[in-house]
Amino acid sequence: MKKAWIIAALCSTMLLTGCGSDKENTKQATNSTEKSEQKAEKSTDREQKIKDLNKMDLPQLDKNPRKDEYVVEIKTTEGNIKARLFPKLAPKAVENFVSLAKGGYYDGLTFHRVINNFMIQTGDPKGDGTGGESKWKKPFDDELNENLYNLRGAIAMANSGPDTNGSQFFINQNKEDKSDGLLIDEYPQKIIDAYKKGGNPDLDYCNKSMPNDYTVFGQVISGMNVVDKIAATPTDSNDKPKQTIKIRSISILQTPKKEK
Image (tube, rainbow, N blue to C red; front, side, top):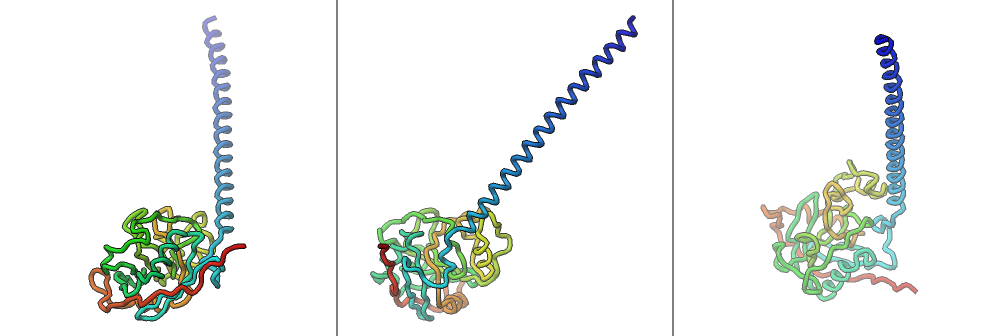
């Protein structure tokens, strides 16, 4: 009788064990399904984000200025640089620049910081990178978005940290291909292609690996040869050109037309 009881107990244990295995298998199958669904959902979200990025308005890539943009000419001792400004995307930065330019603020100021294959910087009355102020006599906020990038020829506000914009600005000059490593879920494909011609994506707001706060507000449309010439000038240990290079004046060639 005792032996029979042991056999019965063993059979009972086997049944219980089998039932536990079924539950565990069901749980594992459920978890696997949930993970697959989550992965599929993330993949769908990523695909939608990529589609949205590639539908974005990218005015820097236009061949010709739009009617709602400014066109300015920066006359320097090395030649003239013509650029478009984007008041809809960076209204404060553009208003500040245009107001200072019209008032002659930039006339005679030097390019005080120049780094070849990076950028050229100006807009400081002190000429050492520590001075300058906005048209409002105080710093103004950054205007960051995913419509504007630090492509070759892009004009951006220089600053000393978030929301410290004044009068200083720089022109992205790098000529080397910077498209390698840019992610299609962070950058529109057309912008990645544009970076093959140069620029500084490390300065972009949308660059998740190196988030930065530089307001892009314009794009050079002619005179990049002048920008390159300024960038190639010999500099001292502080990146200041040994030869004085100045802005002679800035002219406003086109003002935005009001929408009817």
